[in-house]
Image (cartoon, rainbow, N blue to C red):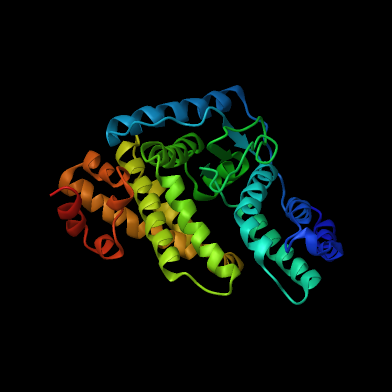
Length: 334
């Protein structure tokens, strides 16, 4: 790590002009990587075949248990933390582009430095904690081969990443078997691929809600309905994946679930503050609320019945139905 280089990169963000936008993405990349240890990506032959087997087995088990028709990205990327930063700078840059193009501020240089620093802190923290990621490449336009490709390329429609150093470190910190933990993470990320594969409309739905919300923000307003819909949809996405991976995983997982839930809530004061500032508490509540809903549906009607949520946008649960799964069952599967 080179914290001096990181700070210097952020400070240098003030040297752009108004056409540079309000985040210096090159500086974000340099600063975040300088503040983050890349971690080792030296995989043994057993580890390489293990990742491939985990994804393959997860796909087959999730298809069978969930009754879903889906596939996974052709390229499965095992990354270090710097690879993950590259991929997610591309993602955030894509998502923030509508805001940057419309936003008007009084002090653009100062704003650029603050925004660049904030984005750097967020990506640096996440790069050290994210274990795996399914990226449906929302708001993607055109050829992404140079924008999002890292560590061997990417599928033009979606990507599946595993951050190997974080998986190794987390397994050690949680005192669980590394191979079993890695396999469990694979089941979680492939479960997300199952959702988007089973619901061709889902990416477009999330994009439209995101675009509506961002467009209103650039005009100084707040589209409460758009962000509410986005939150409910993401609660369904996270919750269904939690339920499905648990029902499909081919080994005991109670200890993994308990320890990972504690990890999501725990950490030192700095880590807890970072999670609060980054909204990770909201993400954890989405996991928990959504998982309770889909477990209740699966217990009542079976796992395959829960997959009805992905048939069309109208089948997404309302906020009230998330608290009362029987109401959703009666509406969708009377």
